[in-house]
Image (cartoon, rainbow, N blue to C red; front, side, top):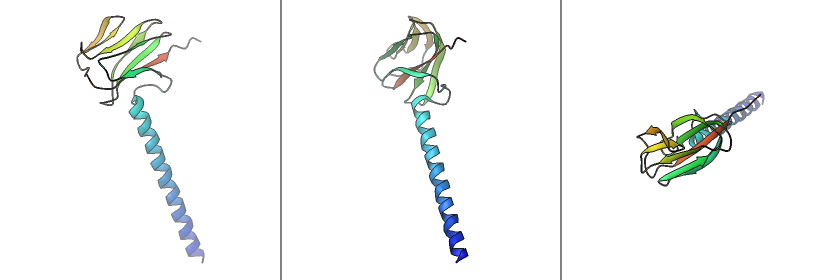
Length: 123
């Protein structure tokens, strides 16, 4: 009787561990697909799209991140000031900040781009 009970407990624990591992993998995978591993959790999504132009005007200063969700990679990050516009322009194959090119090449039409902003915390 004790052996059967021990086996049942062991199987239950193994099932729980497997379930927990699967859930953790799904959560981690979901986060990576949305923002990649190099974008901080504090960064918030400002804009996204898959047209020829995606842009976001920063409400406050901080670090902007441009993430290519189609290729699952960070394509640019840099400091922006309040009121500056970050634009991903597939037709020009560039990323600009207030019209100044900060990255040329590697911007693909039809890809889904997400622009995140991590605000500066003054303390």
